[in-house]
Length: 259
Picture 1 (tube, one colour):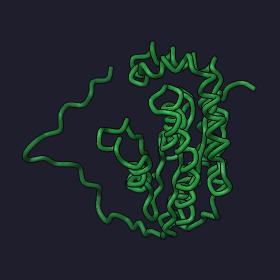
Picture 2 (picture 1 turned 30 degrees about the horizontal axis):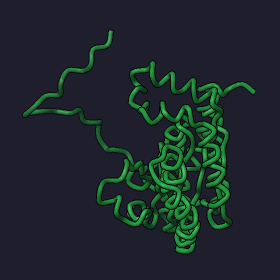
Picture 3 (picture 1 turned 180 degrees about the vertical axis):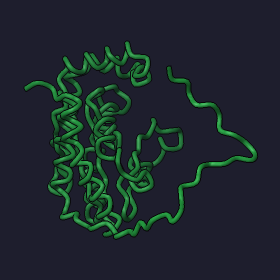
């Protein structure tokens, strides 16, 4: 099966985007709180998947949370504390670009935490998520998979492309030698935190475009019936000829030159 071409991907994504807009309208109408976690290997395609879900939605309603490493104060807090403040309110959709599962992934593999804290996290995470879902939050957890051959190609592309170079960090390069360790950490995480109230879903992202379509379709299929008709708006005739801009204080700057 060949990789999906951009034109075909755009054609297939468009009706899904309409459903996502409907999902957002439903969430606003019902007060639903939707939280989607995107985890996976470096270069798997989390950013593109997040854009596929939220790219057409109102940024005041749908926001992405991508936390940097904890500061000195946050290091002394309850581990889940800094994530709680970013959870959705009524009518909101929150997309976590990595999440509290950092502890079971990069922190574990790269030695940023100790075994006792990892064990504590794996025990507490299902309880924490049970509290969220019992309170009515709709929680979806996705792990994006990719083979190492594709990971290597994407890392090399980031190194060579000045527009993607910012995505490459020393941690990413060090993680190249830890592919199997990440697999082991993921399997331990799934065993401990895949639950009835907050199940994991693995999505094949060797073909990122196909993976995005698969993830979006799965997300929409797992929501309740989200059909809410948009409010009827009347768009009467303007009643006069359209008016051109006029200026008395400042003029616009010159347009970008195009040959």
